[in-house]
Structures are given as C-alpha cells and as structure tokens.
Amino acid sequence: MLTNNPFNEIAATIPPVAMKTFVVIMILLVIAGTIFDVIHKKSAKYFFENMKKAKSDSIREVGGGDRMKIACATAAHDVLASGEFCNPRRRVAHLMTMYGFIAFLIASSCMIFAHSEPGAATPTVYPLLWHLGAFMVCAGGYWFWFFIRADVAAEGNSPFRFIPADLFVVSLVACTTFALIWSFFQSTGMGFLAWLFFLLFVVAAVVLFAGVPWSKFAHMFFKPAAAYQNRIADADGSRANLPPPADSPAKFGLGIKRELPRHY
View 1 (cartoon, helix red, strand yellow):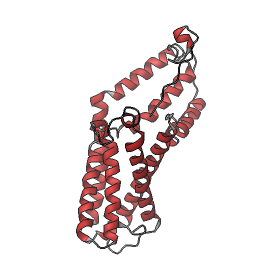
View 2 (tube, helix red, strand yellow; view 1 turned 30 degrees about the vertical axis):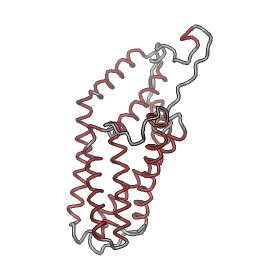
View 3 (cartoon, helix red, strand yellow; view 1 turned 90 degrees about the horizontal axis):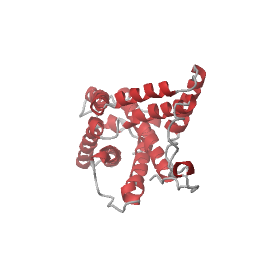
View 4 (tube, helix red, strand yellow; view 1 turned 60 degrees about the vertical axis):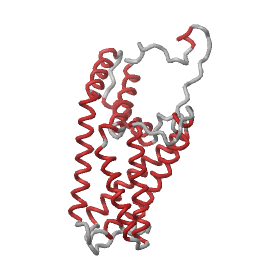
C-alpha cells in the first residue's frame, strides 16, 4: 500500500489525461476562488489602504536591505514555523496539517503528471510521501477538530458542530482520509470499496478546491502579506501612535498587569 502509486493503478480505467485535466481545473478553481474572495470581501482594498495609511504615519524609512531581512524573518517565523500561534498544541497541529498537505499535493502532482501512464514505474519516494502527507493531515486535523478548537476546548460545544467557516478543515481532512482508505482497499483488491472511496476522495477534493470563496483556503495567501506588513509597520514606526495593548498598565492607569489572552 505505502509504496504503490494509486493513480497508476486506475490508469487503465481513467485516462491519465483526464487526471491531469482534473488537477489543472482544481488549480484554476483555487485561483478563481481567491480572486473572487478578494473582490467580494474587499480584502486587497483594505490591505492596500491600510498599507498606504501606515506609510503616511511612518517616522523612518525602511531600506531595501532591511525589507529583505524582514521578509526572511516573516517567512521563517510566521510562514514556516507558524509563530503567530500562542498555544503550542495548536501550533504543532497546524504545522502537521500544513506540511502534510504540501507533501500530499506535491506527491499527487508528481505521480499524476509524471508516473500515471499504465505500466509506468513510480519512484518509491512519491507514494511514501503521498501516504505520509495524508497521515500528517489526518493526525493534525483530527487533533485540532476534536481537542483544540476554541468552541470545543474553551466553550464546551460538541466536536460535531459544523459552521461554514469549518469547510476548509473538514473537506481537507475528508479528502486525505478518503485517499488513505481508497489506497488501502485498492491494495487489498477490494474493487467496489476502492472505487467507492475513490469517488468520495474526488468529491472531497472538489469541495476543498472549489469552496475557496466560502472557506478559509484563501486565508493562507493573506496571512504572510499581513504579517510582513505588520513587521514593516514596527520597523518604520507607523504603529507608534497606536494605543497601548490591553495588557499594558498604561492603558488603565491602575498599575495592574492584565493577563494576556489565551489562544486556542
């Protein structure tokens, strides 16, 4: 199971060109959905207006070299390490899900575009990466869903409660779960169940990539830009005129240290 290319196994029934076309369509859906999300929610307009205001409030100039250092720091801390999460459990779950999803996507693309022809040999690393990525997404996703979510861990709501904002996590975990079950039944020769879970895998993938305007998928593209802009604002002093944070004694004039918010 772990060393078999599941896409190569079904190439005799589903032409490789159809699988490649499906991947391209999913990419186009993500692009179109992100553009729609930006226009509908006016995210880009707000971002650029905020950036323009911050520039007018700046008290010092940030040079090109400093901007490059800030970009590298943003990539290392906020993107690669998800440093914005205060809760270590949520941070670990997020990193497992993020890197698992990246591995799953890369391996899927390689196996479909380069090794899906009938009889084609697939390097073992791609199926291993595909299964490992799917396992990581499931581990991080289920851990987050049942034990870390704020409305479950902090508010006591049922872990089976679903709202539209959960569409991304649910469809992502469903996609990788069905993929693993499909691979298992395919390796054991259970044709009917293999095809059933393959179809469920395809449906979950369509929901994941076509549901960008209604999920938090596009959020992953905005977060690095927002984190970078916040660091620039700190560097050029444009945030100096903002009121002190809620935990600051100067905010209340009472000399009382406020407890920092807990993020779940």
